[in-house]
Image (cartoon, rainbow, N blue to C red; front, top):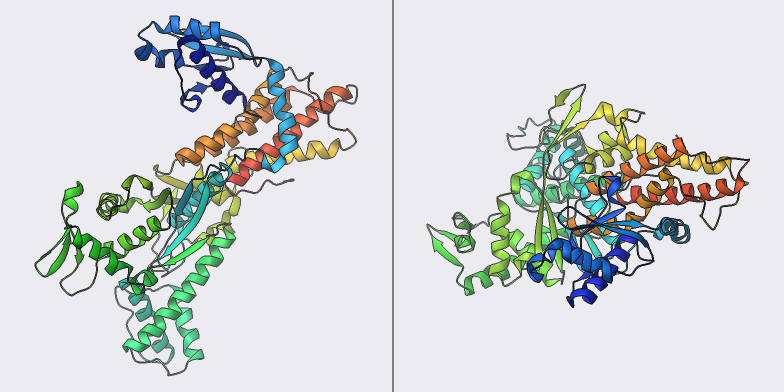
Length: 544
């Protein structure tokens, strides 16, 4: 059954067609819930949108739409201001959502498949240490985005790009080799670019026990051994911590495989054949200025090594060749300037640059007792995902990272995340769910109603209206990738439930008919809240 806002849009579309012989796409018609309750249940500015096209006064257009309007779900339509249409919905229309939710259960909110293939790449941290708070924000956001887009009908692939080649991997190998040598009593400096974390030291000492005296000298062959061991060790740890964080991936792509498969050379060959590269000062350059960049970029340095741009070009070209309709990267704030040259490279290779979307993840500060905690991944003292989860719990960690827009700086307040009070938004939402479960347990002997004609209280209506908004929130959030909108919905739904519970006596042994209807509303609300929490990977607890 279509939600009320969709029914309204379709009815408006038909009225416009009948009144003016203009065929609007119903999905482009804006229908919103007015902030002022006196303006009805829904409002639309469609008359004003048609003004330029029809060359008429918007209030006259609005009246013509009313005259041609035909929908059983609407009891009244009024024209407001310059031409807004305010709709009042028949009260019995809101109760339909209870029946739909109780029938669909966990599938309520799930949309039909739309055939759009989407690749979401997130986290993609170098396998040189544990995942820290910046990665935690991207992991929670990317995973939540994938969950929501799947519910919205997209064919989603979740991908992690492993940077298992380059200088940082060499530095990790040298650091492991240094610890390996130290374990054998040989004085060895880690170096300013080395990794001083306790985990690297522990792994180096472990390898010394497994392979005594076998890899002491930093030869090319030995460093390759430490590279493989280091990557395996760090990746296993990353996967373990992500699993604890309820984050998984469909594909783990390897930079080294991109290099070994010749995809970098193939991409450079195409760029050269199209005239987008040139030699200068012993280096190979890419004409990114032809695509709006402020300067051309080096692809191959004087020493013959490639810049980090080259494997990224080959990797993204590979994504296009895999047939995705939408490609999304979640980049850290320090990569903002990298976007134009990446899009330029895709355009130069003949790919549609508009398919590539890059969402920027702003910085995170960890705050404890009002004081910022400094972090350094290289020194090994950064707060890791698993440490944060151990401290505040997975639910709070995930919720706090997705409750604010991704392009906003985030202060993660540890003390607030631990609080068991309504100040803590995840506690507030989970408490609402637990209360719903508690109510149902207290009334197990009362059979849920199948008709809901007694649910006419203002708080009941407001709660039902919020339930039917869930489909729209799923669709809109998936389209915009603004995951924090789901958190706003969760808080609004919990708030509407608490208001209903405080105003309406749910279990009334003297009025079992009304109780049965209100219990059905509570059950429907509990299902929708659980579905919404699942969208962001947060558990819907049954008791607290």
